[in-house]
Length: 84
Image (cartoon, rainbow, N blue to C red; front, top):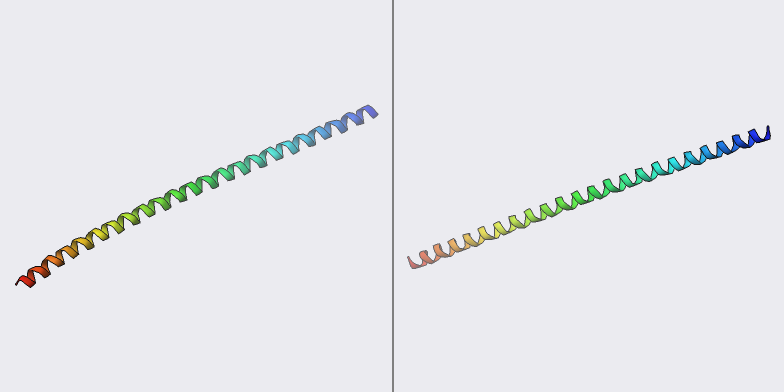
């Protein structure tokens, strides 16, 4: 009887340990997945920000070019007007 009780206790302890290990492993896996997802999201956000910055820079350059062209045109027109 005592042996049986000891065996049962041992089995219960083993089962509990196994359950705890499984739970811990699952939690670790979930945490890893969450971290990976967060990293991916951060990377995507960074990429988007970089793209936006590049677009803004391009737009600014275009605007500057247009302004320069306009200034040139204005200067020529004014000079011609003066000549007149």
